[in-house]
Length: 488
Image 1 (cartoon, rainbow, N blue to C red):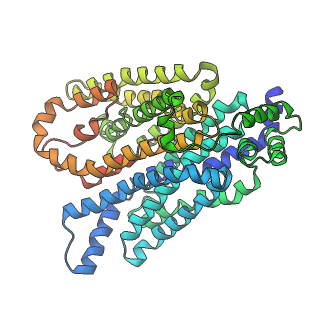
Image 2 (cartoon, rainbow, N blue to C red):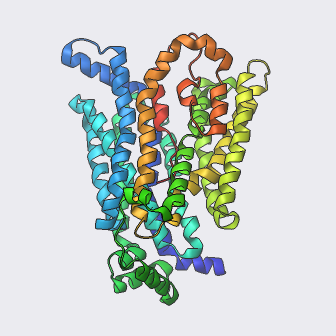
Image 3 (cartoon, rainbow, N blue to C red):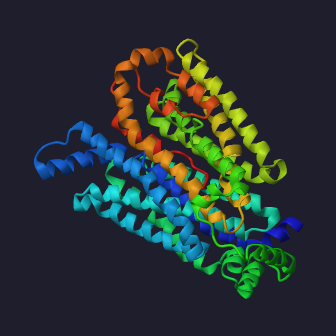
């Protein structure tokens, strides 16, 4: 009965969480996922467009370069968005920043939708850049907004919801990208432009919900607006105790100004917080999770799943991550952040090691592909329950109101820079390793195992989705943007 009453009282907070998430990290996960389905049709469109313009086909290496741009400009845009998030969150507020962010979504969807009619692959390139800016901005502002709007006893769980919406976006993107829906080769402009739907949902719902009370009081000094927002979010007029806590924080921050990113590194008192943010933010991107996704299709085929049905088996990976994110949201307040982080990485190391051995021996034992397939789901569960969600709330909980926007900028810039550099260079690096197929046949899985133990994702460079004796497919670069960032 108490739980039901609490749910009814907190319905505005629940609606706020959903409205912020549908146009925030859901959009991020959705756009990561849908880009894999139209890989070959878009490459054909690039070649056909060039043929119509010049009368000559575009060389394969230039098609690879354009596709690499389409893939890697998403994280580059994310970098710009992360740097833009801090100033916008301070200038416009958390809620208005999320609303303004949809300008990029509408522009990108328009470019995607009319790119084939206009005969311009450049519109796809620009659209991906704009969607990256949108993702980088929303991934920083959304957890800030939700963390500041939630009560203390629910702050961890609410701050974990961005990871849930990311996983949900990935899963919905996988479903929409099925051949029976928008995954048909001729429907790729509509598939890419479908990012407009979550944006419109957020534009319709978020204006009806309150701004962050903490921002209203500490940054704007508006006590009345803060009180009204608190009462709406809590579902009760008795918010005196929480308002007093916010007043104390405002007094503590009264003589301070909003910090800039570089000032975090200069402040000795914040050194440990910044180090934790940088190290854990890097680890969550370089832990090898994406290598597991890259191996998934080949492992499923080796386990006997028909090639035409592999796309349905891959849905299981998205469902697995969504389940893990939901479990993490429930466990975080009970088990604590540290336990989930350490336990998650330990389990990932365990499953990753078994996975590596299973891949190496899959041609020797008939049951090894099934073991490898089980390790994929176990690895994703371990990643989702611990590192994926917990890392995203570090900036919220380790920094005060005046340092928080800068902390999100630092963490976001780090993550998106790593993704951009790897995404841009990976297709060319992988094609350059074509001549070492025999050597990689012998040592193909060692780099992946070392990446799990050291935190370095060298498996991106020498990991083997490439079968010996075959040229690397151009579309392999799409896997690089499928990083499940749950932070910053």
